[in-house]
Image: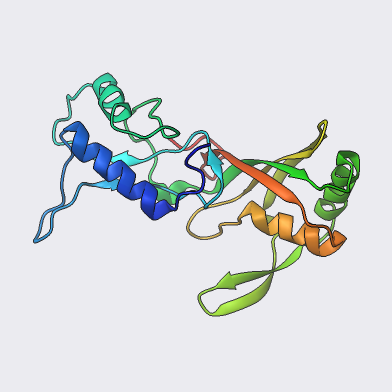
Length: 208
């Protein structure tokens, strides 16, 4: 929670500094300016909470203890960023096809039951058209095909949307686009709390 508003660049710097400080034998690239090999398969958007994020690193010592990596890194990381597990890489970043999110929506003047109804009406449309920024400027796109599955539930003071969307290098849909589409449809300004839960491959197996 404490680190959800730092940029991906700052997160990358934080992890590289922690790797350096921990003295873990990270493999460095060769050349004039060697740097640690560490990459994020799919960066997390600013303001999102991530509960199962992953980072790929390459070690110089293949027999180095995974438990020691966890202990040493966590001792060097700030509050809000923690390493929970270390495993051998199974999938490459290019295999990412989907991401699951939990979106909590609230609006001061709108009951959560009404927001649930508005969400259902939006997601039931044949098309969900929204302006999306690209390298060539803004263009109108239909993000409905990116919606793989969803579930809407009413909470005490917010509406909860659990949704799986297309993700990855070829088709990546930010759930904020759905929030914008809902605001365009209703004219309301929603407060959105977004958590990315997991990443998946084309067979919808968790990315590991």
